[in-house]
Image 1: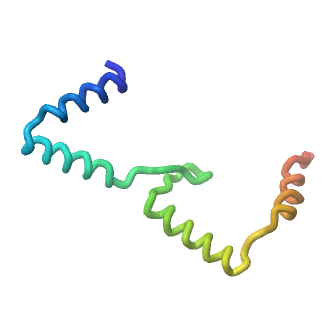
Image 2: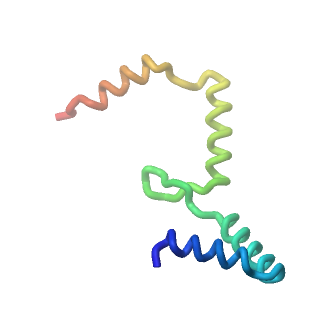
Image 3: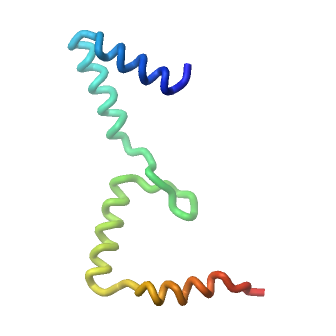
Amino acid sequence: MSAVEMREQVHQLVDEIDERLLKAVFLMMSSYQNEEVPIGYEMNGSPIYGSELGELLDQEVEAAKQGNYITVEELAKRSQKWLTRTK
């Protein structure tokens, strides 16, 4: 059974279950959804979690407000160096 077929079947089953089982399914799914699962990875392969990403983005916004950023022109200059051979 494909994932699409399973989703359709689950939707149908949820529509038909009693309130007691519905509450149990809801709690189980909510618990699973709130579990810390990686939403991305660092360049070294270590996982990035949602809670960590929020903190990191807050720090980046604060750094930008304090003038700690480069202009598009500076980025263009730096990126040209990335394209040149080192040997």
